[in-house]
Length: 197
Image 1 (cartoon, rainbow, N blue to C red):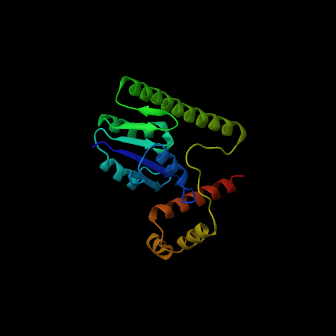
Image 2: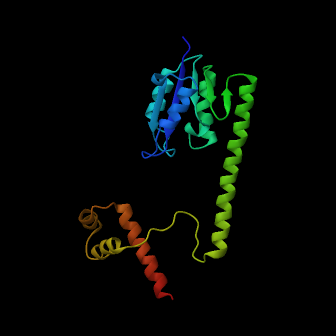
Image 3: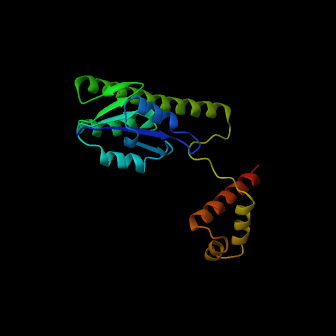
């Protein structure tokens, strides 16, 4: 028997799912068939959504309020849509329309792919523009991850290390060898820079 399922998601625990659930019910989804969860868009692991994917079957319909309930961006949403279409599951996006494994549905998917490509290009463009601005207006700009600041804790580790072995320092401060080496290297570089001024 063909069934209609709904999926609702909010990004933070403080947000409310009720509005989405109400929209899904208005669209004809039985409340018992609505799967809801509170999960940030930054994670790809969504246990309730995974449960829904294991429940829904060939010929069923999945209803969501907006495309962004699927994922953080259009490309990730498509990664969820395409396997469903292969199972002949219709996806009804309330603010967009129905996506099916038909010529019209495939056209919508192609359009979404174009949007995903545009989103990616815009992100790259904004990133490059930000780098160029920083290079022109920030004399201390350097690409890559910003260097961590040496605070009192890091300074204490370094001072201790000067009179103790690496093993003793790691044990005393419950830190890793990589962190210790980073602190040593950074302080030595900063001390060298200061002495050369």
